[in-house]
Length: 152
Image 1 (spheres, one colour):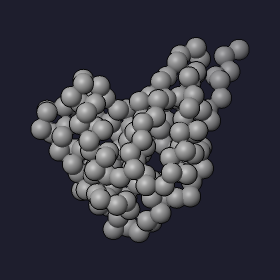
Image 2 (image 1 turned 135 degrees about the vertical axis):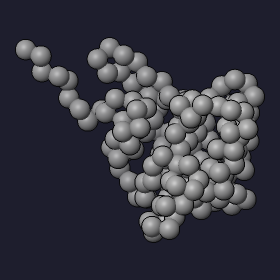
Image 3 (image 1 turned 90 degrees about the horizontal axis):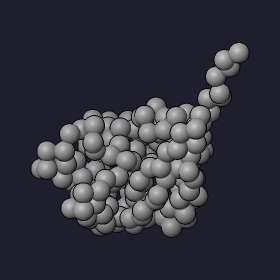
Image 4 (image 1 turned 90 degrees about the vertical axis):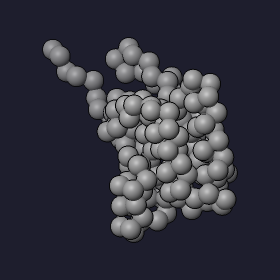
């Protein structure tokens, strides 16, 4: 579990990527701060989110690749947002979607964040610290790069 000043944080994370090796690496990155579920394509991701909603559970964050078979990450994100809209889930109770992709062109960045509903966009390859900083910026965890306050 992730600890900061005595507090414990355990996130429910959905990793969506068709690369077995990237899913393995991401699970290792987050093993101490969250429980990770996996999906190998967008269609499976939508099904996992729907199943969680049906059980009254939720993901805190979804790490979504764009280029995947069956249903790409952009369309999967739109479908996931639509599930929450249909069920009138308040925006603050929805998972944060972070796109993780090798596509670094402005068209995909704008589409992901402004048309699909992603909160952030990170291009591959990336360092673990970038992911953690993004999580901290989205309010998902304290920034692990911040030191303890000097209070005396």
